[in-house]
Image 1: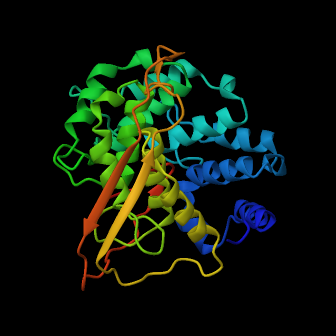
Image 2: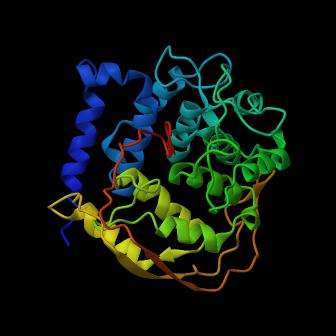
Length: 329
């Protein structure tokens, strides 16, 4: 297994941050706040967050705020849930949430909850379980979950669960790894993971791994780094992590050969999915700003997945991502 090229990653991120006028930067201008969160989080994980000017970043983030309380993807852009979460996350990363008018921001988010418990992404009304996760995650960070009807929000998310154990963007929509991450994450934060069939969903998620070691977002699609993140994160949240899956993905990420797309063949995969350490289902959950503690952990399980994929090719296109959630299906 190769080594992670930390300094090269840092240099790349800092170079992207300085680019303002080239074609790629201009056409992606509306996503800049999301990009700032991705880059800053990466620097933080690498222990290099001091490579950026914290005060300059915070000043720019606050200039992206709209009078409604929400944030746009860049200065002068319309507010949206996606960018509002990124703004909150960036400020939290620097321990600067106090610069926000928390009541104003949380009121903007709460105002986007619909009667059925779902959330719209902005004033134009698009509904998606991504926005349910974003609203719940944002308000949890701000300790303002009591501003929404959490019960209705959970009920709507559960209505998006499918017979395969996965979740879609709306009731009846196809299961998708990105949507699963959002729904499971929202249920985890609210202490509602008992609504998830962990064994069934764990099987579906492990079936997303292909021969290269990477993971796809839906059956018959190509593997992608973003899908690998959504799938592995979801497995961890439901305590169905797999060391075999993890090691294969790590090998893919740091391999000098990069991603290898190969013909699928008949296979029989045995995956030992161990439950996590003693953590409660709601250890991420906040109720009116307080963490829940003290639930039991499910027992380990073994799943054997068999499938005949001879002669079929993995097809599909990459899905764009926005923050920690998919931009579209």
